[in-house]
Image (spheres, helix red, strand yellow):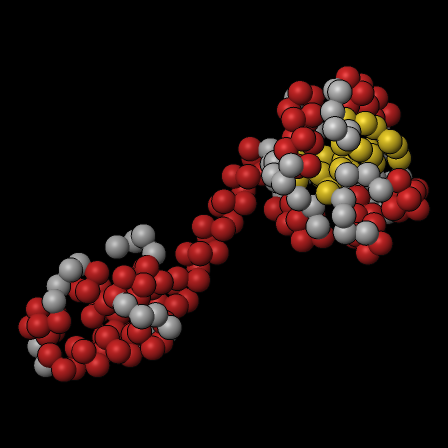
Length: 213
């Protein structure tokens, strides 16, 4: 079974030595290079063709993210694991948009790093727990904002009708509650479906209100 070829791009000697030690101790991994600058990595990594690149973000000169962008212009076959102290959203999302498929914090235990390399090679996307939590929080926030925006497509009356629909009332019961005719309620429902681009009441409720109802 071929070994997983790994390259390290990191300017701190003690970090390189620590990673190198644990990678060399694993029979499934093969360390094929280590670079202290992004400029050197851009020149050499496409030639080495590793499977996994462990990339620091805060390199002297060219940043790790820019380095990754440059390498990915030359080859798309390798996977990038960001290995950094940065936890802020901007750095995380810039790295992921640039092509990283894994994001580990430097406080991660060495044994977990080794397992994360294997997981990444096998199609996973290992993330440190705080990073994964940030991604979930941002996704939930964006989903909520989208639902609010979509609910604002509806008129006040259409929102009112849909609220009653979400409570399980029939069209006739809604008409009685709002002093409307049955046909007017049906027309409101048709308008709601059209504005939200949905086919049924369940889709309409989920799109407009999410889990708030």
